[in-house]
Length: 283
Ligand SMILES: C[S@@+](CC[C@H](N)C(=O)[O-])C[C@H]1O[C@@H](n2cnc3c(N)ncnc32)[C@H](O)[C@@H]1O
Image (cartoon, rainbow, N blue to C red):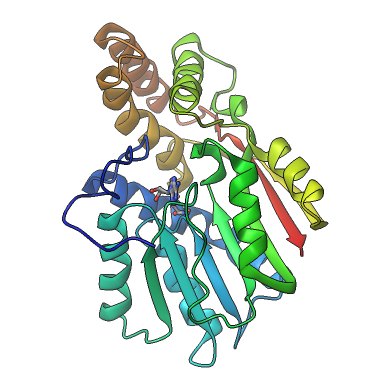
């Protein structure tokens, strides 16, 4: 476990590819509220409830952590683990602002450090892990650490992508489709894999988890619907990052933005999200 320091990450470790700036904080907040109904449903089916002890793996700024803290109540507790010290501080700030005494937070690089069991005794009842496996170099190592943090019979709940390529307009358009490809390439270039869910399933089975439930989730939105802002917003915030990382140039970005703006002028436009696979697995 590492100490909180003034930088945004553990000293010497690369930051995660989407960044930890305020715009990403806001995007993660919007994303959480748009996916909340699916998340609450998954947690309910995984029997996360009053009194549960839960670890939020790669918690980001802690939007799910706060919901978990409310659900498990004063007799339960939530541990958030996260590589970015900026996000860790934000989890602490949110928990303090909301008066949650049942949350603790640790800076952990899940590729190199175990999940601390400080308040979990023989292990957590449940682990929640969303959109983290896709960014790590070794998902097997992550699964091993989650396995090590759970009690016997504990459950791990994942939301990760299984088919990122569904992301885009229907009918498909060349600019936005090539944005999807460039985004996937940017994750790959940093050792990640957008379509990690299949490998995750394999690792879970190899490491002795029983797969309790599988649910693919593909969603669609029209420009006036709140959900539209999630895929469209990611295009707008991630294009400059793709330019900065050297995956695309300004002309490519301008073309994608133009295509998106034209789509938004037609209220009947349809955007599909990347397809998520929900996995509930028992140790
Ligand atoms: C897309 S965000 C998802 C955040 C949160 N799970 C959510 O659903 O809102 C991915 C998170 O994984 C964290 N992360 C990436 N690699 C990590 C690692 N090796 N150890 C711990 N956290 C990591 C990032 O810092 C980031 O906060």
